[in-house]
Length: 305
Image (cartoon, rainbow, N blue to C red; front, top):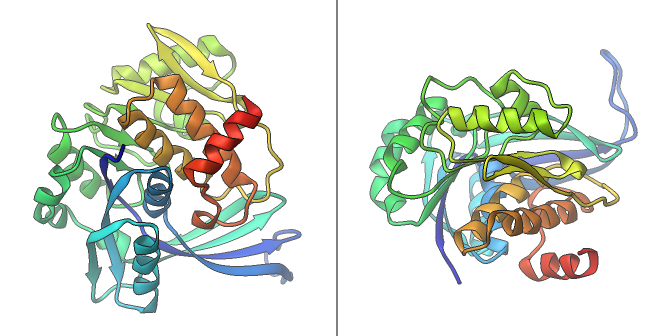
């Protein structure tokens, strides 16, 4: 079953360097490998949903440079509709410089045309956006653009929000969000609470509900994903894999979770599928290049329970 999903968000080119160790101030070190790959949280989530079977419509903005067509061609190769991707003639396409060390990564972001994607442009695209069944958003566009998209979609379709990277929201912005998927650090940023045991999670999840979120989740890496069931915190255990590169794993989870929820999976089943996809992504280099297809995820679930 295919369901049209709007993904409004960031589109980048990723400059990925594999390193033995990160340089100290003033130091030069040699990298082991370099790749130029399409990325951006919104774009990664779009590819993740599409590879699991969703009909994806991407909305965002690229710059006036050679990277723009590379980004759009990659979407087309993944069956993603690019009619909602605009071009800022005065800006550069967003760039991310990713340094991978021992499976962990550090990222330097130059947002470029992502930062000039405006509320007015969202309004101009409103008919195309509202023709879809759900919307998935993140925090790599301006908060005013995010707020405009919420205002347009609230009450008309399910809203999935991956609040990453963490940033301050205006009061009431989360009101009406159907699914919120922060990781541990983002959860602590938005709730001002630390995580210890399941009781803490329950209090924190209910605090997120108090902000207007219908179904808050907290992704905790290999520990699993916490959610509420009849007011009680539950934990879907994660998978342990040999991590090569964790870049894009959270985006893979978000895109896959949104799609599986929209095609009728119950909450723990959608979470488990998305966890498996994210675990597989960690075993490969890159963001979009690492995202598995549905057949791979289902095979992984059969092998790992």
